[in-house]
Image (tube, rainbow, N blue to C red):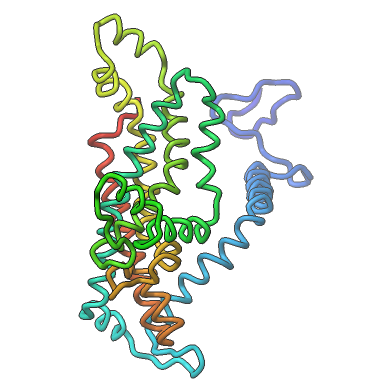
Length: 327
C-alpha cells in the first residue's frame, strides 16, 4: 500500500486532481514559460520587420524633425552661426507679437470660410452623383480631377481668373452690370480669393469621401422612410445625415487640420499680401526662416501651431459623442 506523500505513480495511472507531476531533471523539452517567451519574441520580431519600411521614414522624417524643431525653438539661430540658448524667450516674443495674432486670425478666417463651403459643395455633389444620372462615372472623374492637380497650377489659374483687369470672373460680372472687386489685389478680398480657389480644388476630395459614406447607407432605411410618407428633405434630415455623421466627422477633422496648414495657395496667389491681409501661420513660419533667418522663432511658431491643432482635434474627439452616430 502506497503512502499519500511518497508513493510513485504507476505508468498509465491518472494524476490526482490538483497535483502536478514532478518534471524530470534531465527532461530536454523546453518549459512552458520559455516557450511562451520565445513565441512572443518571434511574433514581435515578425511585426517589427513588417513595420520597419514604414517606421524608418516615420522616425527620420516626422518624429526626429519634430523634436529637432522643439530643441531649435529654445535657441536663437540664423541658420549659419551656432545656436544660442534663449529658453522660452521665443515663445514669449511670439505671444506678444501682433503679427502672430494676425497670422492666426487670418488662418481662422480662412477655415471659417473654407470649411462650410467645401463641405456643403461636396455634399451636394455627392448627393447628385449618387443618383442614377447619365455619365455619372465620367462626372465623378471630372470633379475629382482638380484634387490630383498641382496646387501651384491651380493657384496660378485662379490668380488669372480673379485678375481685376483681365480676369474672366470680373468679365462675366460685367456682363450683368456688376463691378467686380479687386480680388487678390484688395486686402478685403485677398482671403476670399484664396478660399474660393481652395474650395474648388478640394470639392472632389470631400465629394468622394461623402459619396463612399452615402453608398454605405442601407437602402432599406430609405424604403421605410418612403412608406412612412417622408419627403426628400425628411429623408435627408432623419436618415442621410445621422447615418453620414461618421463620414462627416472624418471630413471635418481632416479639413480643419489641412486648413490650419494652408500655405501653397497663399504663397502662389498673394504671397501673404497685400499688406499682410492673407498672411497665415505657415506663411509666417516660412518668412521667419528663409526671409529673416530666425529659425528659432520659426520653430517656436511651428510648435504653437501644433499645439493649437492638437487642442482643436482633442475637442473634436471629445465632442463627437454628442452628434456622431456609429450605429
